[in-house]
Length: 199
Image (cartoon, rainbow, N blue to C red):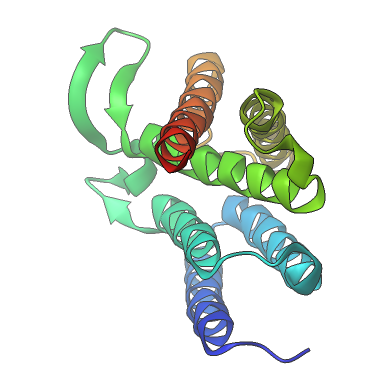
């Protein structure tokens, strides 16, 4: 399969940070994130295999790659004795059980906003008659939330396989799901506005 210049650039960028972080995780003995590296490789393969049929826009491929980088950095970049994922960006809400807004929550919102965008793209590419419908906005949100739940299952697998993880507990899981939904709804809100202006 012949790649365009943009696709080649995204592939090279993604491969470079996946290799770099894999070597880093192995060097520090971080078994937890090896699970995520394997997941990342599977997702990259899925995108690669569907590249021509799906005709992903270059911007979408870059957005997906940036999400992957943010995820790898979240678990691999040390910050204040912990990792970037635990960094509090702004203390909007703080209780004994949780804090909002953390790097982790921002990455979840961004990642599942991109996921909703991707699902909308696939829906409209294969069913163009859905353009302008409520389904073309609602389906991507529901689909992204479902994939967000799958992500939490993968995190749970990491908890079961690795004794000590940075996954967090019940509040962390619930907040992840909330921020997944918020990102997906936000993305489709932007899509609706763009659609309305173009009409």
